[in-house]
Length: 182
Image (cartoon, rainbow, N blue to C red; front, side, top):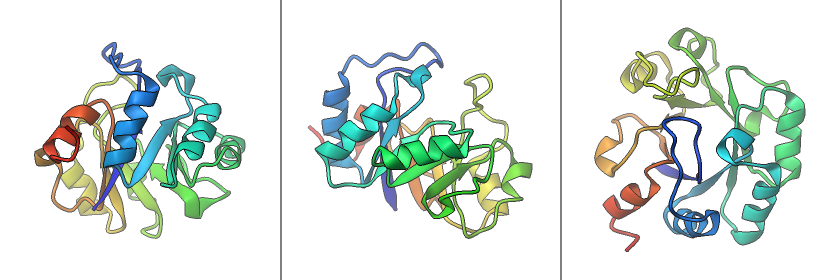
């Protein structure tokens, strides 16, 4: 299973603000993760410059995390050094092999070819709450590579059938549960 860890200092949901700096979180993420997720969306204190910074700090793959509602934003993320780009609510017309697709609903998930890498986020991006549809329901309708995302605090929260997990807000707890970070 791949572990994707997010360097997140801020979230518009539930007023989350980390007590760790970006650099401190990056060090933990770099130690724990197989892939490092860097926000590009300013609502999460992200930017394409942070993707460049992260790329200069590690040899690990970088996931540009954001909505990326245009193909131009995907191109910008790749030019900044991203190895992968999260795309929410659509299938892009460029760099599909580098994109992780995050559908908003199960109906949308059903339309995504199994050749794509997909992220099932338990968070409803419209309001920050939990989706009604579960990871298990997503796995039942999608046979390809599927990443479980959001609300993962420890390894005990990882669902059977996940090919990867994307850990964000609870990075410190998750790292502790792996007994890697002290």
